[in-house]
Length: 134
Image 1 (cartoon, one colour):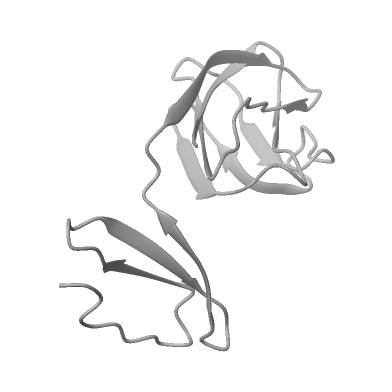
Image 2: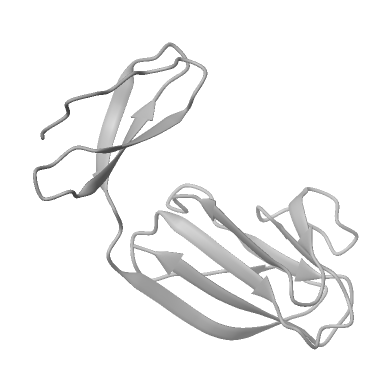
């Protein structure tokens, strides 16, 4: 059963289908006009970055592989707030794309080749955990 059914709704940015005879899940990216962009297989590798110390100066969440998704978790023992963003993210939360309280996690599809992801804390002595799918 190879690609028996596929309906593309232009308002949907991604469409998941089972497209191969072996049942391999494939993700097809669709732009806003409904044009198919790229086909990707399910990611099969991960990179864990462990526990990272962060203070009131933003630090880059570095990865060694070519990433497709990022996961950042605030340590459960944190007393402050973590802010995630580009290099200009500040400890007061300005320029952040999201914030994390103790135990919170955020994950999103992202390729950090052009713009790295940074994490900063509202106070000293905070930690985060990082990981990525490759």
